Image (cartoon, rainbow, N blue to C red; front, side, top):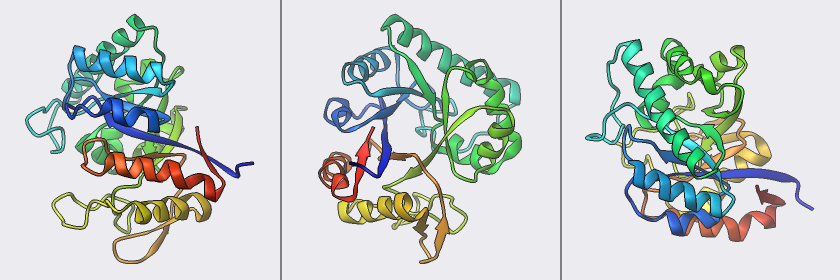
Length: 246
């Protein structure tokens, strides 16, 4: 009998080509839909794989910036950003419909994810862009973030997310990828971070401080070299701690 049930997700369809290896270890995935990466072919093939393995399917919209992989903030008018997000998700949803696959959730990517987490005004713009999906999808967001606060007021269905392969600052923002200690790659260390969040609702930040956090879904970035090793390790060990992956 398991005490905890968690979701493990990864960002896919980003040109790495390892979807077939990772999907069997996932319970949900976030698929690039043209903003930072991805095209009709990659969306379709990744949706098909996820559907085949009964992995929940999410749209992963971004700032429209393939040059920088969506990892740099962009200054856009509200209208332009809304149009871009709507276009990305509508295209993705149309492919889901053609494949008879269900769109389960939406998760912003990269700099957009980080920006809406700390900027309430930008969060409102993003939520306006996805408002037509409010009743049918879940929204993956960071715990205690600005987008979470606004989305709750606007009655979106939220799933709190934590990153297992990233270090955190004391304010629960992610340590910048420009720093050498931003990314975690050691599977036992990653399992320890997972257990701390699931069992104790806290994580150890980069300064050694323990900060409160809640999460139901846990991300492993699919574009890192250690992704497959980490996912396989977690699958082999979480059951020893009364955790199931659903």
